[in-house]
Length: 273
Image (cartoon, rainbow, N blue to C red; front, side, top):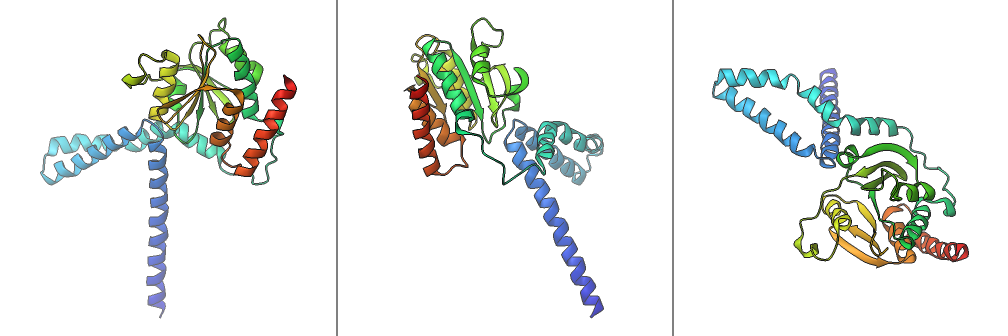
């Protein structure tokens, strides 16, 4: 009986061990898919496969070199995933289900829409990217990184033509401005070539490669547009812009709450006018 108990205990321990390893691998794959490092991970997997093949074929020199390289693979993985691992560890234990909601008037969406309305009226070009599930670390790295709460005055200042940060995209991550003057990939879709300028092509380009939501204000016309999933929704007014941002970015809110916020925004906007 005791022997059976030890066998069962050993099986249980192995199952738990395998589950932990599986969860860890799943975590790494999830991070990799959100970044440009996914191709690098496949490259490492191919190298490991070649290592076993050369070992089976007794190609000793090649196998020896690959074996030495595999010693540094853990370090390579840490370097590749460092920004995402750091962000994950910083967020561990910070989840608070009873976190108080900000007042509606001070919400990020309202601040952005009010700022964009002014930028539109003054025909000040703007390009704002809202990061969602897909990481924009590569885009952030090519701009000027900083961290600030979303503020209407700050948004208007950044895109003012006299400032060094106005030319490029501004990145918002979880209601925080994390970078400005970022360069975005341009769309290669030729159907847009004769219809839009560089700012809009950049908005469509990043929306084709990630799930980001991109807000554009035309410098020539002041027209407000939103790019998503490779398409461009143009000629938006502040009301329709608010509805889109509220629907796409405030995912934890219920439909009825979104409808209520839309009504509140219209009252607030027309009151300020």
